[in-house]
Length: 200
Image (cartoon, rainbow, N blue to C red):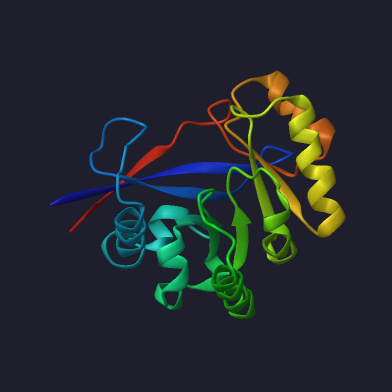
């Protein structure tokens, strides 16, 4: 039985691929997939990375960004994946409760890199921002001042943060992100998600 994942490259400012975001797919066609159960999607991604396809085939020696829901974050599933190869990407609908923050502290102690997805700052996220390594800003959902404002606000809390501009679709957006100080870039301007196939 064929199984599928998609990977979308994440690049540095020189155009070098530094990692891939791994996305669930249920077929070898199409660049999007609507999945109602985020927990199941993450579990399937992890299963395919670890068992069915393999980390080496999917990302080589690069890091894999894997989306984590709140339920997955609070579980111990992270212990199944190698911290040196994985960036745990916290989805935007996660509520930054004390339990969530404590789970992130455990992940950091275990050596994982943490990214916050589709980030829009409010005060409740302060503790998560302190723990995060990367903040992803959606260039489809934000405009110039918002894109800069996120950087300025978050850097005041955590000066070591790196910023990733995602859903970059034009050269102008790439140049804007560069000028604002973003370090990493992802989007259709560089590459659509690429299907990776394996056998179950």
